[in-house]
Picture (tube, rainbow, N blue to C red):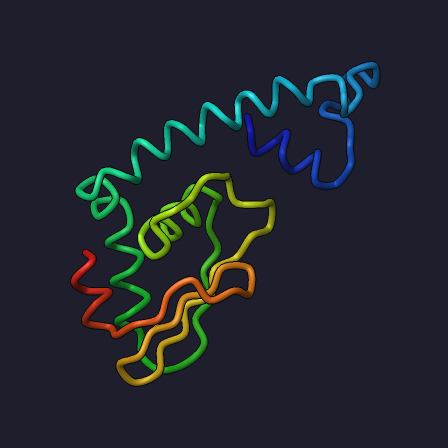
Length: 131
């Protein structure tokens, strides 16, 4: 449900096409409250090291074990959020609509970027150790 509202808000659309009287601003407070509740829930999930590893390990293993080349993945905000928790550790807000993560691997060096800003730099072995 939140995805629907965030997407429509990002494109400056009404929250529903069914009834135009439900203008975009009419439910902003409720949408923000749902977002806060989800932020707290996923904060609880992703600050538990064992649960975070269980959630993110398959994706991260796939990324760091790919052969050289460009590999593109598409995912939802909760996956972006889990990656941020793995590498950044301090996440206090939901990823923006169309947020992205770039992982660059060269030899044994890994750099992780979120929306263009480097959030982590280290070795492949360090990433494996996080899992």
